[in-house]
Amino acid sequence: MDWLKIFSALFIVAMLVFLWPRAGQMIRESRKGTIDEWLWVGLLLLGVAAFVAFLMHSMHSTVV
Image 1 (cartoon, rainbow, N blue to C red):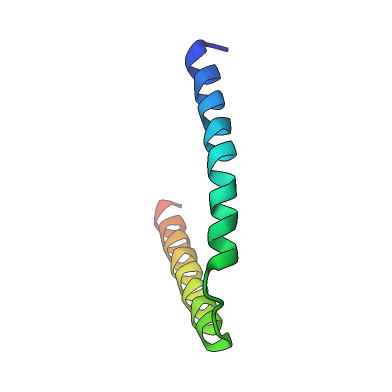
Image 2: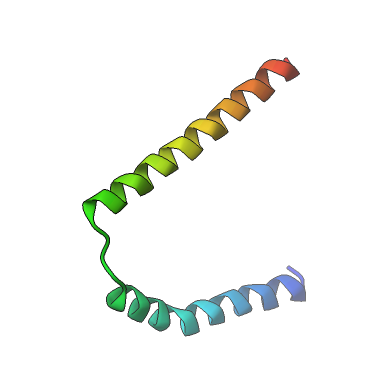
């Protein structure tokens, strides 16, 4: 293991240590979404997943 990987791992751990409390505070103080907003988020994510699945299927069909 070289020094770059060691320093990168230490940097990632330090970022998590310093950012974790701030992220928790942001989550506690954020506005809670309504059921309609969460429904739209779910539908958008489902649409993106379907589009990605379509792209993967179409690329698989052209490669084979």
